[in-house]
Image (tube, rainbow, N blue to C red):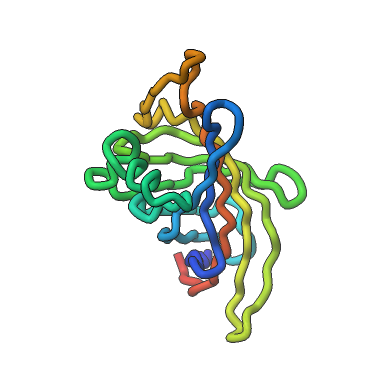
Length: 181
């Protein structure tokens, strides 16, 4: 059997998130630095192994003071936990171009299983003839389950921030090599 190796193209990918603020609107942001890849059967992506890593210090919400606070011990504690990682353990087609993607997410030193949805965007060859494929991966996590416990209350007694963090990763993978296994 041959396995095909894929690398994330960060120039054509992005990782975004949003969370409720004051329970009235969402604050959005992204991570600017990340890497990852996949290993798949040469014929299709079913049962692919997927791995991904995010540089926590690259968080960007368009407000530098907020970004500095998010990097602090109140939130991500980037000095102690510099990366967020994901390692898949299941990737199977559900219907059409939709896949179930599950694996282990490690954030702030805490590893939890997560269930994600991946939508296949298609495949194309670039100007150099390299095969590229695209996926949009979406999901939601509870910030409490990963030690993001910042819990300031508003005057009404509600939390300043929502519990659930939604994220979307638009990922373009570039085929590297096929190797015999």
